[in-house]
Image (tube, rainbow, N blue to C red; front, side):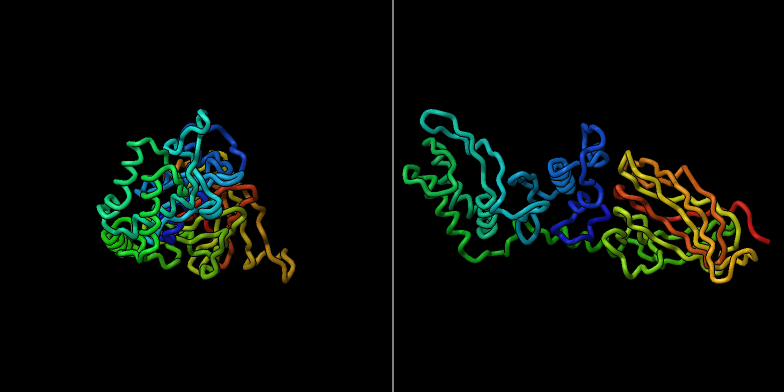
Length: 358
């Protein structure tokens, strides 16, 4: 879960933005592994957001909005909506709100404002026993006498209205422990300990093993101090850093003077969760060429080659496909993609020598 370092509002759910492409699903899916590959519009994206948060123990609440689907999640500073508008535009179907009107069944829904008010009341109570004795016991009496759940005061429903009044009273009083619903001190301590233990020694330097193979950290591209939304740099649980390419994000790497000129075979270490991914375009700008037939002031740009990316289903894997490149000290290696394309994560670039100059 590399996105553990994102802010708490988007922690884990950020994968919806980076990996569940907003589009008409490009193939059928029957599970979440296939869903993230197929992509989708608001519904599938909200489904995956709730799934991934719950997978890491974060409580969620389903959210519907006018012409849209979103979600709500717990944070240490209170519940919040994401992937959509605020509480006042949110609701979710709730069978407990079903009742009768003029002898006919009425299917109700719970409004987001009502749900959010309850979460604030529970947090303000601090001790769960306080909320139980202040609100829950009154709600139990309402259930016994057959009063359906209401979000507003109803004079004919005494016990339900009293419970609602007690809840609103709790919300107005100062919170005893902020807005935290549960204690997360241990979680924060464990997370910080994990972060300090992780190896983060990636300096962006090119490594050249004895056999001449060149390993380049994907995060060592030129202008690493200026990442964009299309090129995200993040810490990696493999050690060091990794990058995530969005849309037509591209990166460029300058070969250091220690690189021997010659022909190399290029491989990429990637994570790809999309069955229908687009290839990576690989090109070389060799401005250091000494070719006597090249006019002065012109650069040699090798034709772009397409590298197919395997569907790794979320696991790290070296590409089985490769391309051959002519490199020399100072050459600029460029990786790019054409839109529409979907999120792709890269850790390393490996250049295996096929032949050398001299």
